[in-house]
Structure formats: structure tokens, C-alpha cells
Length: 288
Image 1 (cartoon, one colour):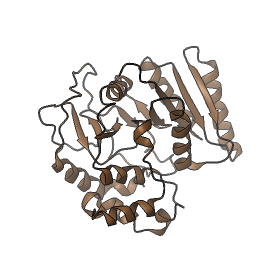
Image 2: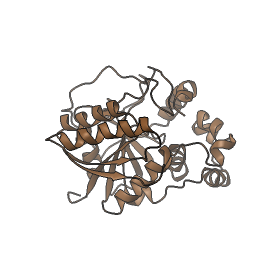
Image 3: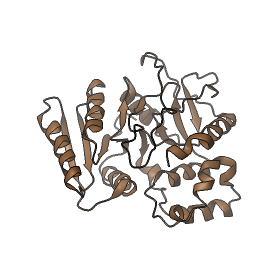
Image 4: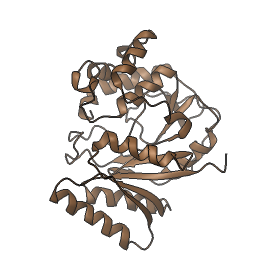
């Protein structure tokens, strides 16, 4: 679908150094026009960091950025939800990056190719740019792409018609899973532990992605992953609010971006869900 309208959106708050690296990675991907959503600054320190971001955007001769300023302090979850809602009112699809998701060479083309080639394949709910660093994933005959129900929020894309299913009410979603006979423990043991905690169930924890992950599981839909990650998460350095300092999610290998991808024949291996479940059971606590 060549006329699919796609917008790239970057969420920023208080880390100018990180955000500028993300912008520079977009320039390296020949992307010069995009939207930047600013959560409301609630301190002088944050305000100072946002001024640095604005200065960079206004004074870089290559960039044409649409700036959106939220009137109220949103936090991460509501920033994501509101940015997607605003974007998908005007566009068919969105590529969403947080301020620590540096895009490797070829990453934006990967997202755009996926959105266009898989637009009519309703089994696919998301396209993920970050691939979990485990050597045990099965790739099958495709070799370059794989399907997982376990979504990753570090640089991703979706369509308006898929996002309409998003349910922010985690407690309600868990009830629906229970009534469908689906056990979260069998899908993602790390998420099952979170879903038993009151702060997640009542919405006081500033997390949006658990519901979206479980939506894939509930509806038997998938995320597409590239064999080599297209996202470097530079926010695992202790500067983020939601993630601990860790190197367990780092990637060092990256082949040429000029690989051929067969978007029409992507295989699903249930074994891969087990591989990711084991990996996140050990390491997921650093993320949520």
C-alpha cells in the first residue's frame, strides 16, 4: 500500500543528550521530518534540558520537526498513549521512538517496508525494531524476520486499525484473558508477577506496554522482529526513570542493512516464545 501515511514520533522529557543522539540517528537514516512530543516540564532542571532540545531542533539546518507540547504532566504511559492518539488521527501508521532509542542504519526503511507490506495482514499487530540478544531464536527459512507474540517497546510501529484495540485497563484485560482460559504465566512469567501487584492493576505504575503485550496474546496476533536489532537503547545507563543500569540488553553485532527481507513468508515458532520467556524471566526486572 504505497499511499499509506506514516509519521515518525519521538517522545522527549528530560534527557537532551540522549534525545539529540536519537535525532542524529534519524538524520543518518535520511529522515529529516518528524514529530517531537514534549511531556510538560515540572522542574527547572527538566525545563533546562527541554530548552536544549528545542534549540537543537530549531538550529539544525537539516531538520524540520513538528513540536507538540503537552499542557499537563503526562508521565511515560500517558505520553505514549496521547502521542499515538494524536498522530493516528491524521496518519494511517506510526513509528514511535522514545528519547533513548537510537536507530541503526536501515532501521527506518525497515519500519516503513514492514508497515506497507504487512498493512493487510491482520495477524500482525506491531513491528518491533529491537530484537532480544539471545542466540537461541529460530529463524527458519526466512532468515531475516520472525514472529513473536512478545512485543518489545524499544522502537516500534503499528497501524491505526490495530491500535484501536489498545486497552489501558490492565485489570480488565487480565479478566478477559482469564475468561478466555489464557494463563499469563504460560506466556510471560515476568509479566504474571507484575500483573499480581496492586500498583500495576490500579494503574498507579507508569507503564503502558504490559497491556499492549498481553493484547497480542489475547488476540493471537504477532509482532515482527528483525534478525539484527535496529535499535540501540542508550537509556540503560542509569539515567532513565523506568530502567535499571544494565548491559544485558546490549547488541554489538550488526550486519549490512542491505539484506533482502521476505515480508510475505514470515514463520512463527512457538519455541521462540519459550526462549524469550526464559530470557525475560531473568532480566525483565531491569525494565519494568
